Length: 133
Image (cartoon, rainbow, N blue to C red; front, top):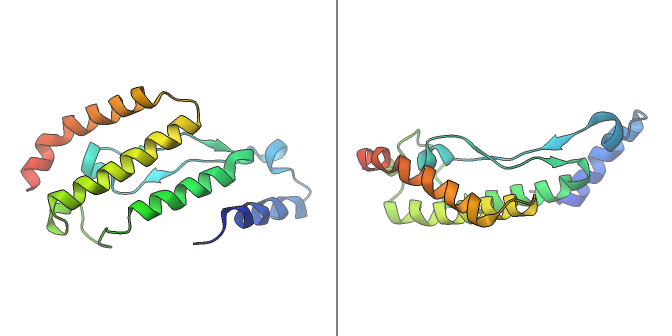
């Protein structure tokens, strides 16, 4: 939870208390590691990095990714079919895929190229997902 703008203001004030400018002196940036992406594409999925001036956008994206995870059970391991049916997992993947593409577009990437890459990774993982059923 929490308000991204308020969080960013707290981060800035902490640096300023020590006489630092977070943009100039620290080079703080953030990327989001997408939860449960290994189930769908077999690897960790990370968003592009946001520099300090865009940190608020990163926090908003993080909240949107959290919203896509609302239906996940809090446990499970690598075989998500133990806890979720294929339709639910497909719907969750569609939401995660759309949000990831949106994050990449915000950083200047082509939605078609990102979507094609995700689809390729997803298709390559299909035999493994079928074995888990």
